[in-house]
Structures are given as structure tokens and as C-alpha cells.
Length: 142
Image (cartoon, rainbow, N blue to C red; front, side, top):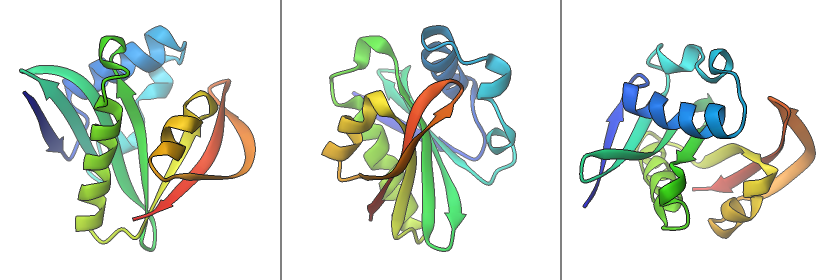
């Protein structure tokens, strides 16, 4: 049974998922993974649970105007390919729309570009590095 919890700051569960995926698996430094958006209440944080176990996370915040930024989308390895990434992003989009968002922006790892395209995101601009990982800007009308 899946459930979602939404908070105003990053929780231990959201940090656990992000550290596991981005730091342990992809080599991002822990000191770079947590930033001011994790504790200043400007961003909302979602954790998806499977029978009480944290399995996926995302955060979102207002970028400018009615464009919101969805990011830090991560799913534990054993849950990838099961639709959990889609579900946590769809939950973020649903919550962004409630807050007035008309467009969602994502800085996507290029290896995940196809995943986001399947959910309606369109890439634009050039590929750029973030933490030495190639990324592409993507957006979607909500």
C-alpha cells in the first residue's frame, strides 16, 4: 500500500533516499546534495512509502511566475521500473497545480530524459553539467 507524506522541510526519510541514490550510487558529495531549499520552507518535499518504508522522493518550489521547479526526484533501486518515479512526480505536479502552477520545470539527468518525455516533458537548450552529471532542461504545461 503506497502513501505520500508532504512536508515543508526535507525529512530524514527524503534525505536517506537522496543520499542513497545521488551520493552512494552516483557519486554526488553529501555536502552538495542538501541545500538551502531543504530547510527554509520555500520548497515542499514528498516522500512515497510502501507499507511504511520510504521508497521515493521529490521536492518542488516556485521558480518564477506560475512556473514551478520539480527536482530531487529519486527512487530506491529495488523500486525502479515499478512506476514509483512516475507516481511521485505526478503527486508533485498535482500539488504544484493546487498552488497555482501552470508549468513544471525539471533539470533532468540526460540518462532519465526518456522517462520525463514519456510523462509529457519537452527538452530545450543544451546539455550542461551538474555535479559532473550531464543534464538537460525540460518543461511541461500543467
